[in-house]
Length: 436
Image 1 (cartoon, helix red, strand yellow):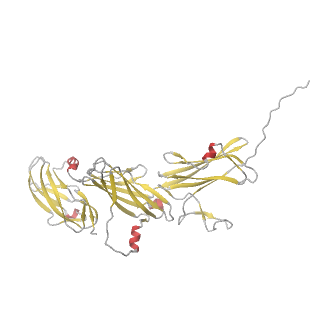
Image 2 (cartoon, one colour; image 1 turned 90 degrees about the vertical axis):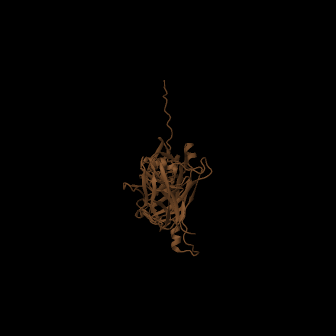
Image 3 (spheres, one colour; image 1 turned 135 degrees about the horizontal axis):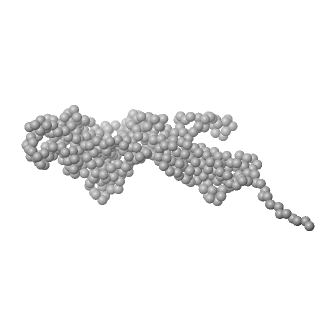
């Protein structure tokens, strides 16, 4: 008898094409950029246009935008179940980049006919310096199942601006924030334009930018327009000043040491309009110190050391006692703002912390007074001051010689009986303005 043997059914082989991946960074043009070649004469665009050889210079605060294209270059075969996804790996984490292709990816991919393709644009705001990796994954069907094609594009993100922030306490309810912004020429390789400067004050505070008035002149000059345009060439620094004061918040009328003031933000543009945004680290109200340093974007801290000075009134006496000086000098309600060239008066409280009577003389050393001078004698003899907190008040007249944010320093107290000289730290800060 004949026996029949079962035969295994063979599935027909389906031929598919392999997709081609194209990735290009999208950005506004630059005045100088290394070129990998030019377009052919038959191109729709001008043959004078250059093709970039890399992603180019990328800074913190810019929005990285890239074009992803998966093309079927075959003239006869389709591409089945095509998927395209992208991730951006930063120094600290990995981000999925959303695109219009996500819906097709979730449904198992799309079929692409010959000489066709799919594409999308992805973007992400860059917030960290260092090496970034754009990871693009393409999946497609084949006779052997789903296959994957992966490509990695590495690029460096640099810091275009060096932000140096200093905070100065002024009385009980206000602080001055001084910001020096420098074009980091080693990274930018060219000029930038600061088009917007703002200070995002903490809740219950308001910030006002301080701008010194110049002599009135109805006619606009080219030099004035250039100075006000915010242009920063490589290595050039511009300074900005904000006054931050308390409003009707939880503690109206008072700012204490350690209170958050807010952050400064800068919006800049490249030569052809490419825009970026950078923020300073969080600034706080100082106690009896000037907090000054270069903002480290990577750590978010102010890395430079701070210098100890004596500021303000009785609320800073705790910081004064830390220095353990036998005699201290504190200004009583110093003016936050004075006019250049007009004399003003400051009253000082001189306190004897020692255990014995002292015959004192207060002095202001002219060589240490920067932008300020004493009206009249630079020293005054005081009455005999008892110890253990005994005090005396003395008034001194000054005159400001230059405009800007100045610091009153150069004060010494001399014990006339022993010849001991006791140097004092900076006494107060004041804003000197010109007459309007």
